[in-house]
Structures are given as C-alpha cells and as structure tokens.
Amino acid sequence: KATGVVARITDCRFYKNQAIKNENNPGNGGAIYVTQLADATITGCEFTENTAANSGGAVGIHGEATAKLTDLTFTKNTAVTGAGLYLSINTTETLKNLTFTTQIVALNSAGDVIQTINGETVPASAATVS
Image (cartoon, rainbow, N blue to C red; front, side, top):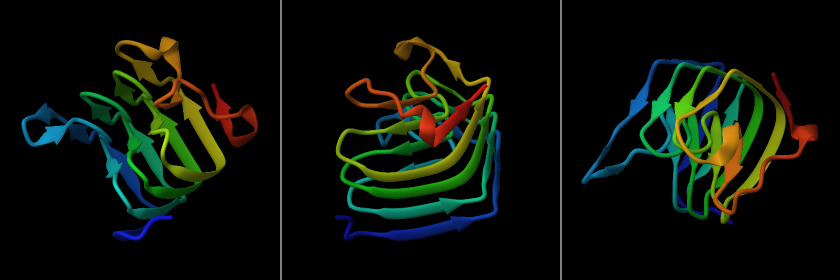
C-alpha cells in the first residue's frame, strides 16, 4: 500500500523526545511520526518518557502508512490519545511483541496505550500491557 518514504529503524533508544503542536506541526509522534504513504519498520527499540501534544506519545502512525513494529518496549510515554502508540484507521500494521508499562494519557481514550482513530485497541495477543 505505501509508496512514499521507506524507513528502517533498528536497535534504538528514544528518551524524552517531544512533539509540540503549532501551525507547522500537529504534535503527533513524540519520538517517531510516520505519515501519508510512508513504509516504516521499527525493530528492537525502547521508547521512554516521550511526549506528544496530540497523539502517539512515543510513536504516531497516521494516514495511509504501512508499519511493521516488532520487539518494542514503551515506558512512561505521554499523549492526549495513544500515549504509547497511536495507529490511524487507514494504516496497515503488523505488530509483534510490544510491551507497555505505565503509559500516561492526558485526556480522552480512558487510558488506552494503543489506540486507533476509531477508538479500537490492539488485540492482547499483539501486546503485553502492565
């Protein structure tokens, strides 16, 4: 589906990054923001204390992007929605072995750590939440 930018991110640590909201930035994806027709593969990474003014405290996947997320750890990330990970309704995602600990949701979403634009959460088989 994706035909835009291709990104491969492996074995990284993202610590205390921030996505602010202003006239040029929607404030999505505190550490990583994937949008439109991008194709992103993120493997073996840790996301700790990242913040987004809007959605995806650590990672925000929006638009018709394709995302393959494997062996990721999310700890104490903060956003209005999808504190750890936010997936929009039009994304195509493959999720495997995602671990979430103490995500902080500022508003909305009733504490969901993974949220799609239509309010669904990721199946428990794809993620470990503590």
